Length: 325
Image 1 (tube, helix red, strand yellow):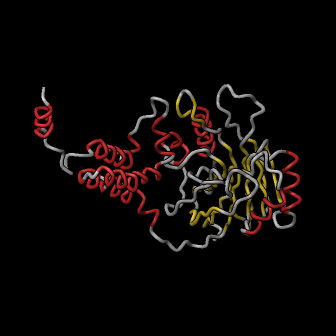
Image 2 (cartoon, rainbow, N blue to C red; image 1 turned 90 degrees about the vertical axis):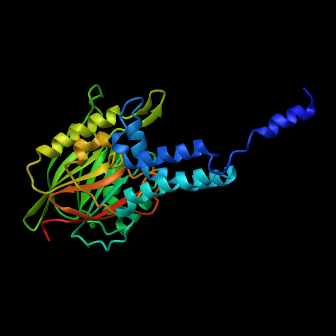
Image 3 (cartoon, one colour; image 1 turned 135 degrees about the horizontal axis):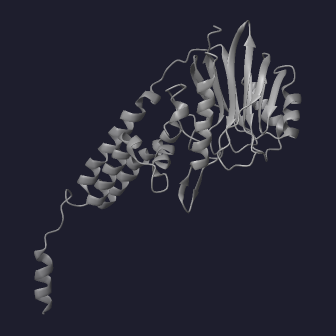
């Protein structure tokens, strides 16, 4: 075949237009939009992919700037138009959290913090927590030795305290009825002790408080490994559901975001503020809120991440409107 013949064949194939290029990019935008809108329909099979998607759901919004950049590089009008789908889906899902709302003050301030069992700066950590002027502090990953140090640092500001295993509660108000709550997943050693229930007393009114630390999740060879956390969340949900006090607060490191359907048996029993992104983990670059303060029979009016401590988590402050007010 001559060079002229080859050139004729080559030029006979019309170049793709801007509306024909970038079909895979457009498909990616459609998939991102579908995951945003229908994340609760993604099954927790094939390595718990549903929980994985829900854990990082806000970050699917990155499909918009990345999609625009890729579409410009590909010179694809189709891909640019398709980017509008995940943009609209992200706004639809998260607009309620972005609307500015003046929070009600509340009458009980709770600070939750996973202080990390490798955190040696107890004094500095306590200083950050006390600066928030809390009425109650719940700590997870606190050793017996560290618990004594925190008690000393909190001093007369939070004179009432109870600990159980690796969780502890320090309070401005008296604490009664401290009870260990067994939320161990089946097969976990009895030394695993991560939940404490107390009753906070103030002016004749009482609030039941659960401080809990659910098992960690991991990305491993089997996918997103959440089975232990899910089982522990179910046991905590049973305890909260059986609680006879009308007002209940659940505070702790749940190792889950609230939209994760796998922990719905617990989160369906309590409420949290709908506004804001208060990512608490990891401290160096927070991408998810896995520390929570939730309530039943009361209203959590505000949550806010506090400044860094020596932990790999950020502390979380919550203001709660209780029946006391």
